[in-house]
Image (cartoon, rainbow, N blue to C red; front, side, top):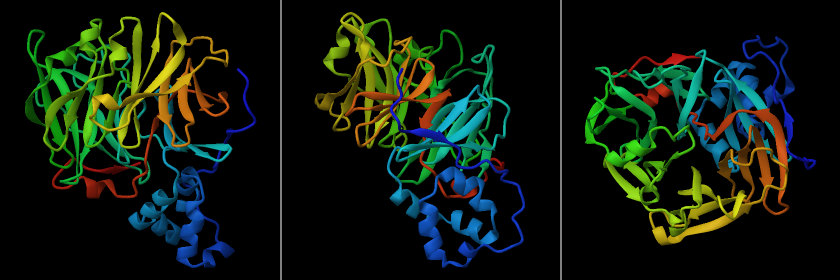
Length: 391
């Protein structure tokens, strides 16, 4: 695979974030706060959180101010900031600025964990287990990587055959509340049930039955078949029966399930749907024709959310980079300029649509889109919820 001379991997910071600041005053500290905010907005977030935040109390106050967060996000190019994990143990910021890719650590707080999803600046994680992960409830966490705060999600009151891959974190804009959902079965022959946890309320509550059709995809959702957008969580249902292929939704406002149909091309028995993602305020899925062009990957975008007729094939990515295993393909994000950040085989790749060229980042692992949230998790966890801890 040939790498174009761009997207160079760089560490924005190699300092220990707990190192005490030097006693001598820096000239930049004499600048007005408004000017400092403008300067900070031009820096990679890893440098802000690992270096600048610990330089002095006044800088820390600026960087943890939600007003600065709003300014930072307003100037940030969409979908250029990601969280990256390798071997279930290390969490990093992965940020693209121009020709450079900045790679900075996020302090670990548990030994091994897996991504569930990212939602409005909060990260939903689960404890990693290599054996029998579905026998009992896993330990779940909510983390704000910007503030370093995290909290445990309350466990189930009774033992359940819980499928956490069909759970996720969402947000209700009308009530300004974060909510988590989980799908489970009380027994082998029982129907699927759904519980909802409102962040800060302290316990889960049952919202009724979940669509039985979700049972077909219990073992196909390894973190790539789900997405939160437009106030709803989405699961891409892939089954052996082509008639069952569809997207199941859960609206966090109404707490009701629904569905979105896929385009007719998916009904072709030689077509395989690979994963689901978010582009702006709508969704996209990736797939390929296993019979005619299995090495060419397609990205379909729903141009108008909820309108089946608006599904459009926007991108076709040819395997011209010599990827050894073309079947392992995950589109992580489609950017506004048409570039695509993806995982192909075992590596992370930046694909430029205009030149049809690939840039390998030289790192292996999983990455998800993440929008920073400069609000304390204590403020998000309203009421008498679980204790909020700091990394």
